[in-house]
Length: 446
Ligand code: UGA
Image 1 (cartoon, rainbow, N blue to C red):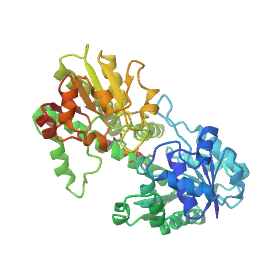
Image 2 (cartoon, rainbow, N blue to C red; image 1 turned 90 degrees about the horizontal axis):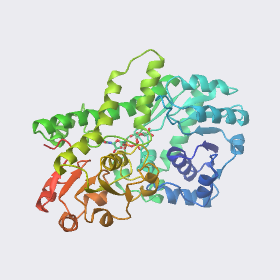
Image 3 (cartoon, helix red, strand yellow; image 1 turned 135 degrees about the vertical axis):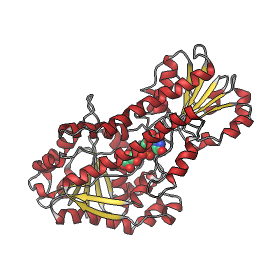
Image 4 (cartoon, protein in one colour; image 1 turned 90 degrees about the vertical axis):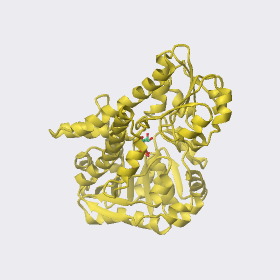
């Protein structure tokens, strides 16, 4: 069977490579020739665990065909749209790629081919976009739930596949692609060299069918709720700081209630990346469009925006002033496991400290290059932890990379000029820091 995937971001590349390994002939289409050239050479242009061996094999076998033109759509029975939906300055979603790719594909599609919207779109988009197809009933919404950093594992060992649309035949055609992937997933995981724990802890994946609007709203609601959990934990962290409680203990105990769950309760510098900030503002904006207010999400956004400044304030209180102080910021990716630095709280913190007069050196194991565009020119990029921390008054850990958790603090204390360690993601053991003669500050850890 032949499919097309339009858009070669995290979602498109992962979906295309996995489907190709599962036995499909896959046309991966992107208008960016640089991306297509890298993919043709058998690798990804972003860092993502496990993706390169899949791309390499699929390209070598001739099953994954990266291309800058849409010709592959003509022979495809299912066409996945995985294009970007960046936000407009007013917070609403920019849907120009969603509509332009649907328009281009609609002219080439076979009559009974199914168009699958995987891009995150505001509720109501599908109703409009489907009108571009000759057969609007063949339009489906199939939102994506993979996370960057665990994209391959999330796609293979999914919690649920959601497919919305008016035609049962179209919905089933989409579900069948995932069933083929599910059948082959352990072999694909092996090729991607995923940890066996994925297989051992595999959930029973559910297939959920719904109407178009529900499918669209499921996606943004899931992301908004996760963002809400993080902001809730961060709000409690501020209260914990003020009262002497420890937010980690609080959220561990609260999350132990199965009705609540512990996931996404880690307090810290707040959420970033290409999804949560944009999806939350997109939800608020699309609710406004329907005349509905979302004060709960406005509050989540405000708390999130306050966290980098809150952490900078704590560092400033401990240092006296930032003027003339040298500070290392470790972590520029918006989270561990990715080279993505979009809306990265680590970048934001480095810029805040720099603006307030500190001399900042920044390092990330994967995201130095991607972060460089957003970092103030006066922030010094470093190529190792050692280079970043030597001679500094304070170290801020802003991304939870395993290599930062494993740092030898006794050695580091000898290389630093000062003694302040700010753990902006609450990933360190305060006792390790203190027993190395250093001062520990976390977020909400009393
Ligand atoms: C998120 C969702 O988790 C995916 O299910 C969804 O498919 C994806 O958005 C998307 O819409 O494409 P992602 O943005 O890759 O995935 O990353 P997450 O792991 O969700 O983390 C988002 C941010 O929240 C990161 O900055 C992370 O550091 C932060 N976070 C996460 C916290 O601050 N605390 C937590 O407890 C968890």
